[in-house]
Amino acid sequence: MDSKINIVLADDEVLFRKGISFLLQRNSDFNIVFEANDGQELVDYLRTTESLPDIVITDLKMPNLNGVETTKILHSDFPGLKVIALTSYNTPSFISNMIQVGAVSYIVKNASPEEVIHTIREVHEKGFYYNEQVMKVIYSDIIHGKSSPKTELDYDALTAREIEVLKLICLQQSSAEIADKLSISPRTADGHRNSLLLKTRTKNIAGLVVFAIQNNIVDLNEINL
Image (cartoon, rainbow, N blue to C red; front, top):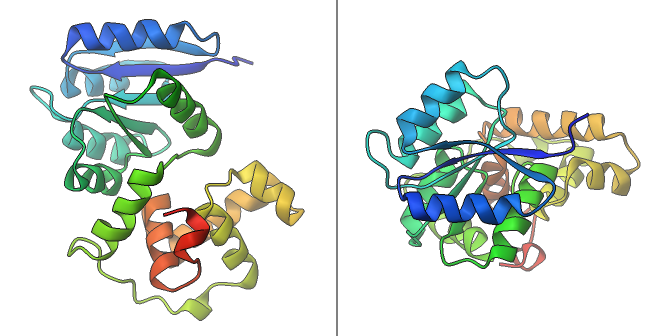
């Protein structure tokens, strides 16, 4: 079994992309399998490769196909693919847009190498990773913004176990960690997560966090906002 995390990079700034590639490949568990100059080249590669990567790291501003449109396509065509935004744009509107179209994490280019490496490993293990800044955006921009209307689902539609799982998801616990805490199997934890996505009619973990905050299932202090 391949223990390496296979990564694809997409960024039209060649010097930056090569620098990130060099940085990441100094870690024995990282493997850069492809570098794309823009979103279209990335999509073309993924549609023709025999083996999808574990993670895609993409910039936002790229020629031909930008990061937002690229992420929309990847989220639709390759739903199991984890997309991390790595960009110099640090405003709430960019962050919320990328999270809503399917990115599972968001890093700014002035982040430390340690933060980038930590984020990739967290995403690989848990499927997502939201730092404090992203969590604040999810709360302030997505919840209070016009782009995310409150769901009509009745709180009572969730089982007690699903509420337990939802609270742990909001604490960014992996399926393995949730399983350990609740004395269930990781597969059962995944099943509860999928059930929550269906019942709340949300597309990703960010949507579940939004639902939990809107319905007072979690306290803001619990998720370190």
